[in-house]
Structure formats: C-alpha cells, structure tokens
Image (cartoon, rainbow, N blue to C red):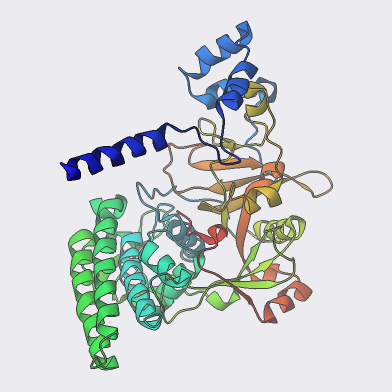
Length: 468
C-alpha cells in the first residue's frame, strides 16, 4: 500500500512538472508564439504563393524571368574536350576529374580515340584499401587518446569515403600505376558505391574498437597490433574483390589511333602502362584555393587529408580570386585542362547546365533577403566545396577579362549542356574554391610562397570535406 501511494505521488508530481509552462529565458512563450502567428496576415497574394509553393518545386517558382537571355555557349578560349564520362551513383568525382586531366594529355600525345578512358574501377579499388589502412593505422596512432578526443571522434565518424582530392589521384597512380578502362571495367558496385561502402565502414569501426582494446592490454606488442591490422585488411581486400573484381597484375591491350586503326598490341603492368600513357610529374601540380575566412598568401595543410597513409596531406595556397583566375586563363590558353572544385548545387539550372547567381530569386518569392557574402557563407557553414570537375574553357572580353567559364562534368553526356556546365564569372567568384594548376602557369613570385611552412588545419574542418 505504501509502495503504491509513493508511485502515485511521484506520478502526480511528474504530471505537475510537465504541465508547467517553459520559463527559461530564450524559450518561446505562448504570448510570443501568438505574436509570431499574428504577424502572418494571409493576404490574397500570400495565399496564392502558399498554394503555389506547397505543390511545386521551389526552384521552378523562383526562376528569375528577367534572367532569360539567350543561352550563350561560345567561348573565346577552349581546350578541346573528349567523350563525357559518368561517375554514376558514386562519389568519385575527384577521380574522374583527375583522370580527365590526364587522359586529355594522353589522347593528344598518342592520337588515341576520343572515348579513351583510364580505369576508374582499378584506381578506386586501391583507393578504398589504402583508405582502410589509413583509418586503422590512425586508430593505432591515436590509441592513447580517449574516445572523446576530437581526432578520434572524427576518425570513427569518417572511417572511409568514396570522395576525395587530387592528391589521391597523384598518390595512387604513383604507387599502383594505371590501366585502360577495358582492362578493368566498372561493376555495379563501383557505379553504386553506397551499399558496399557502408558495409566496409561498419567492419572498419568494429576492427578499430578491437585494435584499441588490444592496445590497452599491456601484454600486446606492436608486432601483434600490426599483424592484427594485416588480418583485418585481408578481410577488407576480400570484400573489395567481391564488389569490384580483383585488379590484374598485367594485361594485354591493343592501342588504336583516333581513326580506330590498330597501332600495337602489348602486354603491360599497371606501372608500365602509367609510365607510357600517364607519365606526368605530379610534383609540378599545385593546389590554390580561395577561402576569404583565412589569411591570403599563406600555405595550409589539412590533417589526414590524404588517401594513402604513406602519402602526403594535400597543401594549398590561399589566394584572391583574381589571381586564381589569371592562372586558369593562362592554362586554358595553353590547351591544358585543370582540376577544379566548387559548390555546384548553388543556383544551378539543371535543365540548361547553367550556373548563375541570378538564376533564381528566392528573396522575392519569400519576401525576404539572402545577403551573405562568400566569407560569411563559409564561416556559417552555408557553403563549401562539394564537387570536382574539369575546367576547360573561358570566354574573355576585349580587355581579356573573364565573362564566363565552362567545365567538363562527370554526370554523363545527357546532363546539363551536353555533359558540360557553364558558369558566369560572378558565380565563379562566389562558389569556386579549389584549382589544381601546373607550376608553369603560376607566377614565379607566387610559386615561391609554397616554400613556407604550412599551417596545419584539423581534419574536421567542413571546408575540406571530400569532394563527391
């Protein structure tokens, strides 16, 4: 009886507590909610807008009719582009973009067919194995830190990704070579990476916890930890083989010219094929970036922003947009494509493949303003680099100033403007972030700035999330 009475009393007290109005400063009171509700007058025009918005795509309603000028696809300077590639439902834009830069050189040098491609599946296989090793080794490197440490938390949150950076292209090809696409073609899972990636990430997290437990045992030696890591990576390798096929150690390939005529049939290893058809000096490629939240003319390095544990973190020089544009123009004028990344989803007209800050008027639609500049958008997490593409054209005015730019995308030939995206120079300035440019297009005084000691930035900085 006493027990029942106590429970009843507790329930009554709990009910009284729950019934009390929120009294904390900053919470919305009933009067405040009423004031907000009364501010909406439900005029005839508001009702019409509400009816339109609840039943339609906002972009269709916000499309700026005043910006309906004829779509201009003429460019004063353009690098001849080849067949459009398609990354399908994967986050491999960084790989397609990097390889598109390399294949344009190979096609030009060896008179290859325009639809020639390097095997994205081959390089991606090793990318996923190397990233798995990077994660597990980083877990061992941070074994003394608690699970609440920021680096440890970031590692467990990001054990594996199919996104990446140009540094991955450089490190992976240097280490593993490369091969033509028909030597290791795409599979269902390389075109649709989410399921197998989620399973590998699940396994890696499980393995990481086991490694940390082992490391906490005083009787565990470093050799035992490394042996266990190798055992874990063997399981990951098996999963990758099932999903993507096993990379061939050598292959026979028939080289044809642009007319389809046979040039030669030879047996290659991935390294020997790379030496012939992707023989570039990656040390001459530099990344420049526009991040107005950080000091210009400084070099920055991002911790763990690499694909290979024994590779390099990517470094970039932070520069004003006009200086980046000058380098890009010099490269295009010399018929050289570049790795380029941006916040592609902002003001993108998907039907035209056109990027223009005036494409949509969201402010007029909702009766408000959206006035943040690039620095404010970055600082408030409203904008970041999300996609890599190949910068291949610029249209210059009579004074040599850029009017618009064009990139070769990797979403297939049916997307956008025949597989390309065109952007106004205003959009380029607002939403472009990274450019990888060869040293010969960088002014000598700017190139010297890369010699300074980089400022290390944390891996969890959102501006440096892998491009997908």
